[in-house]
Image (cartoon, rainbow, N blue to C red; front, side):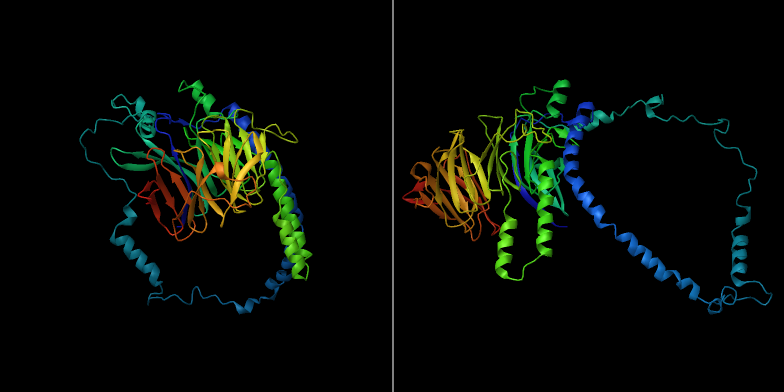
Length: 495
């Protein structure tokens, strides 16, 4: 049973609702889900039409098979069959079948013939009671005084205390992608799965946020039940191999649909279908020369960038903790997009009002990592497979500065102890530290690092900086090791 944990996110302690609400489908929720389903159905309608066109030849094949096999029964001859039902049975000297005789002896031995006969019954204790009264529900029975309240018992099981720590993991088990919300009780040292959600595709990144999206229904339900204000919440944004970003409420149990979707499923489904048809046509009309094949492959890999939504997998997410309604996303379509969660995110047809408010194309290849600067909340840091790292102000992206690196970028992190410095982890096992003030607007120019760590024998796929202990850095690599570093200088050296 193969299990892959592709992403993990902590939930701020004390933010989760003490009593999570159960997912309920009311009229507003039905309308919202119907809109989400309609967008996906529009994208799948073309695929179903193509499948129907391809199945027209199946009926002719079945008719031919019936014609071929129709005469098989006529070729069978009756003389080839032999009735062996009576010849194979053994008989005793009296002419009775042995099996029938054994069955009769068994019936007589155990008196099975008299089993259904009712004889005289002896008087028993409490024989004067004609019958007993049965109740369909225990609540109606006056002799049952201890009443069990299933709702109260379920609430106790789902209760989350203010001292509990919540962890959200993106997990794929037996090709089933899902989110699991773990609760860790520090006092008893107990960790368990509280609830989970099913996802449409393999998850790649997670980002926790407390801002309720405008199209979210969980905040309105919680406000109606008087369980807290709607200005804050407990949500998780999920990026998958699909171009859309899903936002789920962690305070809702047994949720079937996300609270919000960033993107246009109806548009991207049609785009992917067109690309698949183009690839099939290219394979049918394949060229004999290798040169033409290379050109066609290069043409297939290129996807038309859209300024309003992603058209490829979402690889990284970053939530702005100062401007809480802003969410940044990095995608394999080479773009970085900025989303305003306070706007209505639903859109249909040619309406683009629910799309991203800004789209930045500062890289030439997949954008693998992204993070907002906590000290300067309008500045973004990005890393790409084009082996560059860049930082820019989201209000003026043309003034970006960056550096050329020796390998693909795996992760980026701002230094919480120095607002101008950041860390970059690479595929070749190195971790670099830069000062953004020394970078050039031309990444091709050489940029000096503050220091370099050879952290792992392989890609450094995970990187984080401790905001409470100065100089404490943790890295994780494909060599199956997690290392903790002290990057503060002690005696001219770094540990």
